[in-house]
Each structure stands twice: as C-alpha cells, then as structure tokens.
Image 1 (tube, rainbow, N blue to C red):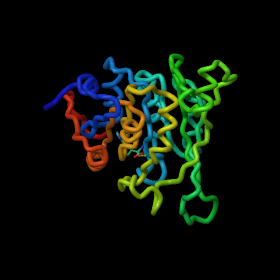
Image 2: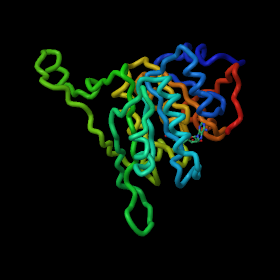
Image 3: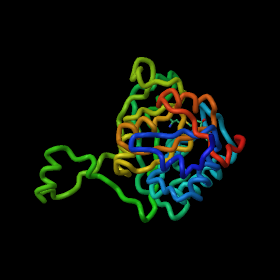
Length: 256
Ligand SMILES: C[S@@+](CC[C@H](N)C(=O)[O-])C[C@H]1O[C@@H](n2cnc3c(N)ncnc32)[C@H](O)[C@@H]1O
C-alpha cells in the first residue's frame, strides 16, 4: 500500500526509521522540502568523486544543488567527503546555510598499500541555518551535569571537531559490518546527531547506504527517514534495521 512521506513519517516513534523504495536523492529532498516535516538534520554522504562510485564531471554543481535543497529542508546539514574534494565547497556554501564547523574523522587503520601518504581522514562540513540549535549539553558527564544543575558550570565544554574512530574493516567492528563498501561507523555519526538533535527529533538521510543513520537513530531515540538509490543497499537497510521499504504515492523516479 502506498502513502505520503508526511503520513509515513508521522507514524514513526522515537528510535524508529523508515526506508523508502530506491529513489534519487534530489527527488527525496524535493519531497521533504514540499512537506511540513522539517527534519532537524539532513545527512549528505554521497559518493566521493574518487574511488568507489566513480567520478562525475558535474560533481561541484551536483553537490551545490543538493546543499541548496537540503538548506530548504533542515537547519543542520552535514556534507561528507575527502578533504581535497570537500575544500572547494567551503567558499561556496549556498545561503541560508553557512559554515558551522569543519569536522574531521580520523582513523589509523586504513590498510592502503599505495606508495605515499596513507589516507587516514575524512572531512565533514557542518552547515547551519540561522535557526539551527546546538546541544553541547548532551556531551556533559555526570559531574558536569551536577555542576550545571547547581549553576556552577562556568562554560559549556563542547565535543571536539576531530572524531577518532577506526574504519569498519577486517576484524574491526565485525558485528556492525553490512557489506556496504563505504559504511561509516555508528560511533562517527552519533556525535553529529547528539550535537544537533533532541530525542524524538526527525532526521533525513537521503543517501543512506547501509543505514548507519537508522542505527544511530535507534540509539539516540530519533526518528529517521532513509533512502538510497540502490535497490541492493535498500535491501541492506531493511535487513540491518528489520524494516520493510515504504512505497510513496508519488512513486520513485528512475535514477538519473
Ligand atoms: C558513501 S555512501 C553512504 C554510506 C552511508 N553513510 C553508510 O554509513 O552506510 C553513498 C551512498 O549514496 C548512494 N547514492 C549515490 N547516488 C545517489 C542518488 N542519486 N540518490 C540516492 N542515493 C545515492 C549510493 O548508493 C551509496 O550507498
């Protein structure tokens, strides 16, 4: 049975995700922008224009289009990529978004054997609209929370902009592995969502790959809309989260 994105999302409880039948990211962003859903966060983790996923000549325009659409959907937008690819967007952020922070994911365990520097980082731009709210208080420990309650916390210590977590590879985090070639660890997405959401908030990941956002949503009590253009990866998400794909009334346009 088919439904609308708004109806399907309104039926989610905290911690639950829905995954759409395979659709193009731009279609899903347009649907979300035209709805009254207002997800707190849109996560953009596209192929990186090198390596897996190949290269596209219009990559810069493509990503700028996605950022423009995402800025109409959410007050917080994350854009992932390799630093040398992401750097070109820092000076081109489409308003009303602006740069909140350059985040780095640092991992030591990349087994690459190329002659030269061994890649050990990915970049993530945290882009914010003027109405975006941050939640550094979600990172306080017990002692800090107690001080805060007593009015004795002199400043709010935020999380660091470098996230150090190993790549999911080989025997590392075996139980989390789904077989997706570019799966991010949940522990890398978690601080991003912790900083930008409250439990019960809705988040959108329109290029969800293996569904890492769904796993993070389950942990943090968020509601998540997931999508991927690949039928195989939507299958991975269904298996990982124990859910079935949602068929929308508007249908899924063919991949571009
Ligand atoms: C880097 S991976 C995402 C990995 C994901 N964050 C995870 O942790 O599993 C990029 C994903 O974007 C998807 N993708 C590429 N082009 C797309 C498009 N036009 N619409 C929707 N998804 C797309 C790919 O199928 C791929 O799964």
